[in-house]
Length: 191
Image 1 (cartoon, rainbow, N blue to C red):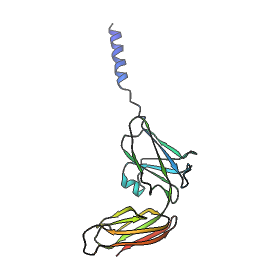
Image 2 (image 1 turned 90 degrees about the horizontal axis):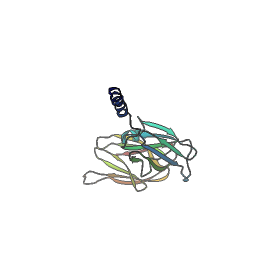
Image 3 (image 1 turned 180 degrees about the horizontal axis):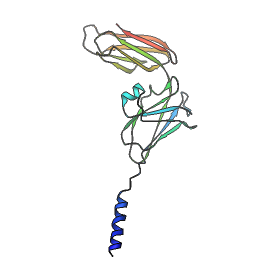
Image 4 (image 1 turned 30 degrees about the horizontal axis):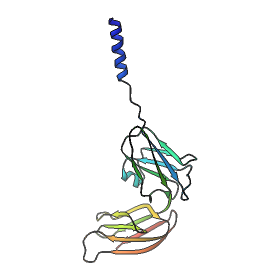
C-alpha cells in the first residue's frame, strides 16, 4: 500500500510539472501593390512602436511563402507591430500596422505593401508641427526635435502640409507639392 501511495504521489508531482503549450500565433498575409500575395518578403515583428518606426530590435522575423503568408509562433497576448519590407516597399502607409493577439489561437491579419520615399524634416523653430501627406496626418515633430528622418512618404505627386500646433499670432500652415520617387530622399525645412 505504501508503494502504491508513493507511486501516486510521484506521478502527481510529475503531472503538475508539465508546461502548458503556447498555441498563440500570428499569421500575417502580405499583399503587393496590386493586391496579390507577395512571396519572399522579409517581415519583422516588434513589441514597441518606437522599435517599429526605427526598424530596430525586432523580436522575431520571417519570410513570406508563395501565398504571401508568414507565421510567428509562441507569442504573448500583447500588441505587436509588424513590418514587411522589400526595398522601398513597406506597410508604413497602412492604417493597421499592429494587432493585439488573442490567447491560444492563430490570429490572422492582412497588410499591403506601398512604395515610399525617405523624408527628412528639419525643424529650425521651437514650435511643434503635424506633417500630412495627401491629406493624411503622418508625422508629428515636437518643439525639442530638430530633425526627423523616416521612410514614410508616398511616391508620386505628394501634397505636403506643414501645420503648426502650438499657439502663435501667425501660425505656419504651408502646403506644397513634392514629386517623390521610390527610395528618393526628400527634405522639408521649417524656417
